[in-house]
Length: 463
Image (cartoon, rainbow, N blue to C red):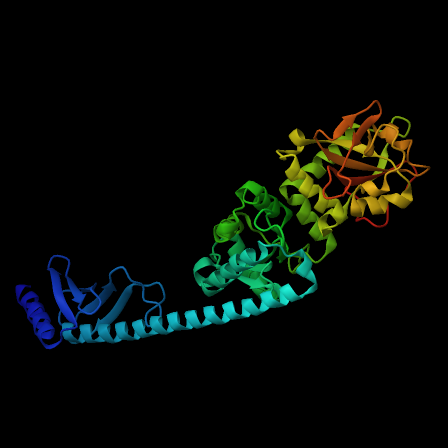
């Protein structure tokens, strides 16, 4: 053994004298390991050999460095195989190392070129936005917001393999993103579902949509929705109710961290809904599925569930039962009814459904129900202000039914607690801002009683 050890060291010393690219750092005889240094880069690599030297099987490891191109990606080991000796091993390694460094250099150069091109494109997009009809919506923070969001798009897109998600600016608009999550392990449930998805469609990822406020970024968190494919209701609930989507968890300057968390949640809970026949690719363009998604979200899901419970526990005495409960699906379509209410939630420092508001009833003519469901309780439409200025709500369904003017429909509303809510004998008066900048009232559910029929402008009934 001593002879071939000495032979190895002699060969190394001879090579180092002929070639100043490498030098010997250490020879671990017990573990058959040579540690050599690269003079130019101040880096080390290790050569492992076996007892059959010089016709040994050699393994080279670059310390603290991953080979991406010439060797298998993320693999630090190079298996040389059986060749003549150490000199040949070093020669092969140096050739690989040069090729690898050239590859990385070109990759970095391409990265910078792409980054520059994307920045130039975003500048052109900003000019178009400033000159477009949304110019009146832009405030002094918009340019900063645009820059932050644009930089994030570029950062994510150029490093998508590292992050395992990519972002697309819809129509080059950095306030509107589609984020694609991919790279799930094939052994996980979602990984297996993705493999099946690829056999049924051209999709190979989970897509989400994020819409950032043009005028209120970063104060308002983005609107967010899954787009495709459809996930099971149970997995949606687990993802949405994890706490990752709570307003207080949203940090506009760490969106990448938020997306990392979403990736982990999809990896943990994600399960694709392939339909009854287990071979259909569904998505959230179908209104029924879109509504299902909204009801899985923390606030809407909880307030709707508690609203249904409230209705069933508070029946009208002179009418035996209700025959339908319909969710106000305009809430999920960004109509004023929800937009004004979301701003109102911020004015009252909303804590939870039970702590920050209450349910009450509103009776009106059939002709007014659709406009209330869409637009909410617009102060410009106030009539009959006997108990003072505001919108009127009944404590009980019986009281509100008296204002229905012959129809059998009531609206169940969720009202935020505030000093603008006044309690009267028959119910409540809510003084929403006269300029209609925000609202304390959300028209949540439409209930049909007795012989009435469900309204045709809302989705199918919940019960």
